Length: 92
Image (cartoon, rainbow, N blue to C red; front, side):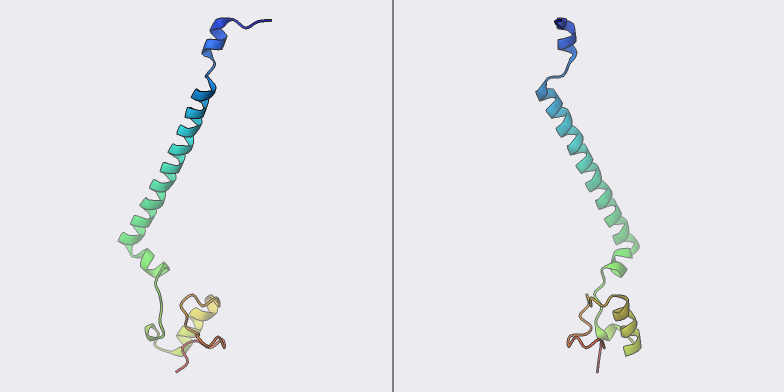
């Protein structure tokens, strides 16, 4: 059985399918970037980013107990509150 010329003409070529796939991937990436930038912008305006990404130092705490609570919440110590690594942050 041979295909009729009209059915072959209706099928997209490999090149057209690649362009369509590239377009789909490209628009998805652009959409994701727009969402990410929008969320970041909302965080900047609202001050949320300041809280999430804020670097804390021992001087930011009124007591060692407050520093200990922050340290205990994330013992990975991203703020380097315990430089001697003895488990007690902000020793004075």
